[in-house]
Length: 209
Image 1 (cartoon, one colour):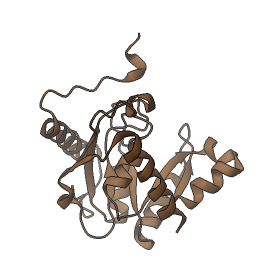
Image 2: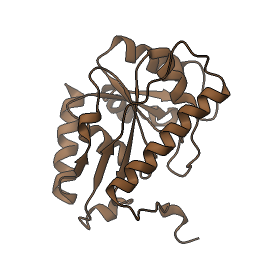
Image 3: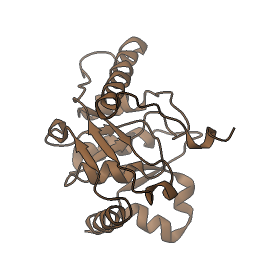
Image 4: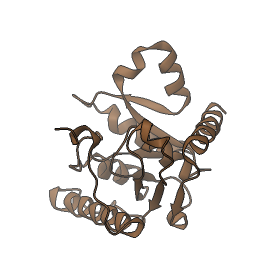
């Protein structure tokens, strides 16, 4: 109930300040649970991911420091977020999302690069997908990269790619893991070009350096 309320509030705010985003390939979203992955380009792109894939509900990973504030902790917990120690991720970083994907009607939004200032893909998503038996769905966001930029009403886009199935019978060694990561990279590139053939991502934190 809380998640649906927060999602509705976020949708109203986003649509008022920036308008309705253009959503491409929503038919690629599978039935049941899945892991929605994408390059992390701005702090608010998880909101666009969750809104664009609605009515499906999602869980999220959030850095453990955010849970120290009791008010923020309440919001995060009721919005289906769970804490992760990014410096020293323990078994719960995998066990919790795998358990939720198997036992709850919740998909997972995850950024393989970890942070929005890193473009290197990590393998955690492949392990979670293999253990939970759910597909990986690549997605990309294109639009304003700062909160101030949203008020410019520059058009925003979300695009969903073809689901990637991790073979549960195949050993998840470095070779296979790199195959999955490469498939995600190629799908991100394909989706970006579908939205805008000339698209080039520029990290806002690096613009003035």
